[in-house]
Length: 277
Image (cartoon, rainbow, N blue to C red; front, side, top):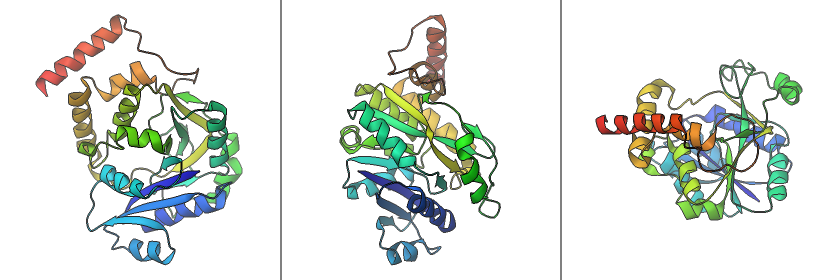
């Protein structure tokens, strides 16, 4: 039922671990599709040798374009987008598919709960890199470390229907290399009437960090926020606060923002930023 789409950029050892976790810890068989950026570190040879469905580019074409290319090969009803440096904890897919079954419609955006060594929903250190990663400890403890089902998630890994993905046109490629693309995708879904943006506590992944963008993170974040501001008329922070209500406990479908004094004050600040950007 699920096509798992993973863009990668010369990050073979982390990709191998991600794929290992999907094979080892999934309750069902899924379609895995990888977009290879460059691939000169051995990624291309590995993917071909193991017969993974894939697309490729000679250079790094950016996360948004990578995912859009890979989703052209999707054959399943649902698309799950993941980073290549994520480890999926057991039964992640059963949790997701049980939620989909309970909803009984496809007008949703579902996401996981991230365990990270220094940030994330759950801060718990099972290793900051492959050399220090303690898989056995993670597998023995992940059930006992919890966040809660939360509102307004906009992080990968996330699940949407292929029909909804196609309707909004996938990721907006003006956000390449990628920062800002997730909230922009959420905003496009909001415009289509989606109001269920739910992060599932029991769908857990361990995330090492955004390895491909870490060195230039400040520049890229600023650029992504400016693009979002110009496109939608308010900032990513404003969208997460007043629309998605990010990280608050899940209480059901979201509603239009409560347009109180603070809403209009923060919106005015966004408009001023827009004028001087």
